[in-house]
Image (cartoon, rainbow, N blue to C red):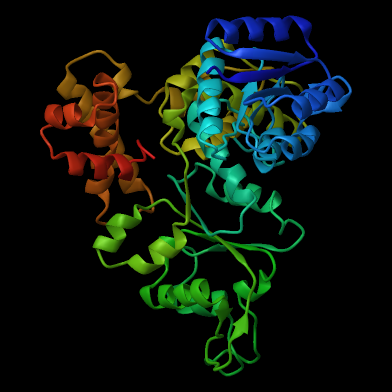
Length: 472
């Protein structure tokens, strides 16, 4: 029995095009042009999938979702919009929409999403998806890469829950901004958002900073003071660089997660706290656990909703939009005359691997604007970037390319603030992750065949795929 798809859109031609595409693929379709028709159709017909335009003539599609779900709680809803924005994506996720398509609609993407949505309905599941686009300082986002769409799916789902979130990613990928967006779209939005950089505080002060202290707890404790957890009560606390916490403080943090109460340093009384915890790190916590520098039980308490941010080199299709965003942003901030950037320069910026990620790109644009004396950003304004080699894009012997890539990565590691002892793990991931991904693509996802090609045990392969988040 074929699935029934309702197409709710005020664009006559688009309705017919979508219907023809879906009917050719074996679906039955119904078409409505406004909110009233759509609600009437949902009341009278047991549809499986609904393609719902945000701007629907007499109604806002997002505002219709709640009413639609009152009449049909199993139908999977896919939002359609001409302009994908952060808030529409997050709102769609909060409304439990299954998916999100941006016009012009790609036929393959349409059929793939409708197929998955129909399967979800058939199995009476409520697994939904959402896409959206990278942050600027005003809370907006840009970028439509599939890698980031997966991130925004998780952000949207995390925002409507109150569970602990662990944000993973290299330096400069925007971990704090993810935490801000989760908070801004949660029920705690009007309450405190407290940021703690665990790597920036001396170990002697971090316990007092987090949990507070009583008068006389130590030599300079002349009065009692609330810690960050009590300051964040009823709101959200963001613990950045969580891997830098001393082991003894990790134990106290574990108690906060378990008991939802804090005991100030030097005190005997505990204080209940109602706080949502979001933690982040640029380190591989599994390696830290193996080295006995991070508690395994704390890791499992933190890793309830993991969100991994892709490095910029894995979503280079977003670079032109980010370049445009940062250029306009800093022109406005510095009150500069309108300054353009050539297509050729943008193309060159897209070939660079950006080891410092979005933060490095942002700083490169800022530096270029400072150095620019004309009305156009030129290659010479990006000399520190464009003069660097991009090893794997250069011709030559494979061994030479690999050597250059390793050299660049090692130099970056040595110049960073990364702790000693993690270089091997980082280098291994640089090579292993794309290797496993390519072999899986070559075998069409057949893990047995992939393990045979790689010459490793299938269980080992599965463990690696989970570690590198190549499978769910």
